[in-house]
Amino acid sequence: MKKSAVIFASLIMSSAALCGCSPAREYSQMSEEYLYVMNAAAELTVYDYFEVNGVEDKVRTAKFQRTADEINIMLRGLDSALSTSYEGSDISRFNAAAAGEKVQIGEDAYNVLSIAKTVCELTEGYYNPAVYYSVQAFGFNGGTPPGSPAELPAEEEISKYVELSGHFTDLSLSREGDKFYARKPDFTVECNGEQISLKVDIGGIGKGYAADKADRILTENGYEYARFNFSSSSVVFKKYPNDGGMFTLGLKNPRPEMENGVYAGPAQYINIPVCDSCVSSSGDYENYYELADENGSVRYCHVFDPFTGKPIESGIMSATVIGGSAAENDAITTAIMAMGAQKAEEFISAQLQNRQVVFTLNTGNGYKYYTNIAEGGYELVNQSFSRL
Image 1 (spheres, rainbow, N blue to C red):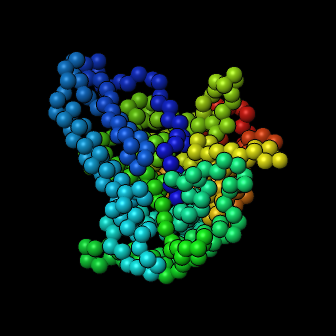
Image 2: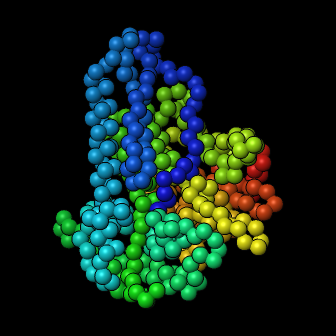
Image 3: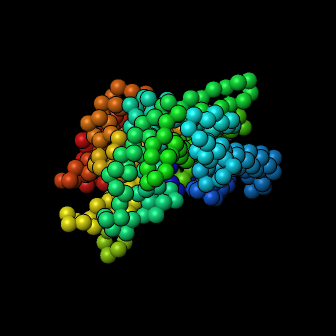
């Protein structure tokens, strides 16, 4: 299931001046932007001694450019392997294959599908990238959004898609020498007069996987002070060259206040110090539409409940996981949003003790936030949120 090109976590840099060991040798930053990779924008920022006494250090500049180029090549390789919009990509070929067919794929697609299966099992199916047909039926990821409630997909159609996606973990992966394969589940359903087999969209988890690979590239090139921000959906934080090495991560307010059509109040609701960590977030507040019925306006977002085949109705507005693998976190945040508050708390307590987690909840009577971060480990910026 794709997270789409939306901003889920708002990154706020520390405002303190960058400083080095002496006035003649100060840290400065160089950035490289990558646009339209996996339908999103990415940005690399590195802090180094790019100038000494006002003179550019061409060796360090050249090293940065080589690193940036290496990350660019990696991103474009992943795009061509994981994209559902490229007909020749590994995932597109898998999706086009017949039920039960064995498809040769590349190592990256193999790794991402392996992570997807692991997290699907870990979350008891609340993360499931095989909700492909449901996502399109509701107008996301290339589908046509309905103009009224009457145009929403029929219950019978959605139930077929749910039945099909429930076979995601039947997908089998194998490695034979230096070749990688994925075998489709030998299961189909008939829907709208057509026999269809399982399809997946791993665009969202793909961004986290890319962030993990960028993290390794930065380490291999010896960069201690850096960050890599992929659509603010998955972010790698190395160290910041000040403030004890800590960046300030500001999580975006999922329901920003409006005044005369202009955002009022803080853009974020909570600030968290981070370094040497991968962060992934999901939210319902960018990629969505609303339809009016007799009970008022209903929000339909791009995050889906695999058990209903419909956009989530859990009340969770956003979720963020800090630490561990960005690819895993990408999938886990999606699952948390589908679980609902009670199930999510139980899951976090049982499975995510070594990661920091925050999620927001619309109770209908106000906004709450849950976190396993101890008091004093974060700053609540927006007082319209209270701790769950």
